[in-house]
Length: 250
Image 1 (cartoon, rainbow, N blue to C red):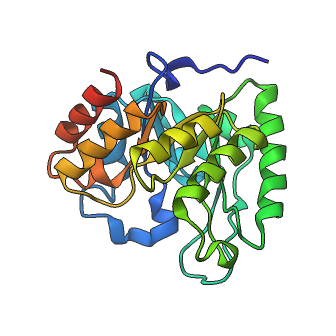
Image 2 (image 1 turned 45 degrees about the vertical axis):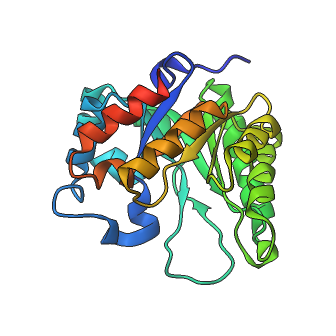
């Protein structure tokens, strides 16, 4: 089966604008401008991103603007808040069928490996992956080691474990957090095999630190980056997007 990548990849590389943080973090990440999804849709379009990541509600209520932007929609199918402090689990909130009706070109799902509920999320992901692949839709797995079982374990080793899990679970792209040095990320990319790797942009960084990280991500063999706050929290989001784009696609 051949996956339909379309415009999600440009020259085999990906630059996704992530805007799914509101459910996970609440509105604390936003200001008067970027709290408005229209601001983010505009950044995704003008910044020439190859994908926009949102949850179901934004995809529904801003569907006309997302379609008009022609930025491929990546719909996140599960989620949770950060209010509950027990073992992490993110349940499915949207179906593949709904995602297709909303014009999604790919779907995403978070799995917390190491959680007491790891098996439930893995099984739910398998059902989503199987359904999405019937339509040749790419599936992105956010794989994050979390929970009491991983406390005290090496974040570097867990990064490679997450990459391998993405490959063996059947993801087309695995989204990771970057820990350690470039050699450690290279090993994670090797561990992912033919599953593409994108790295999460994470918390807001200064420009020098961010561009150094983006460079390391691309040199390590990753397919790209899924970045949010480091773009739409920037003083000049389109300037930040251009600098990142020049590294990702150079």
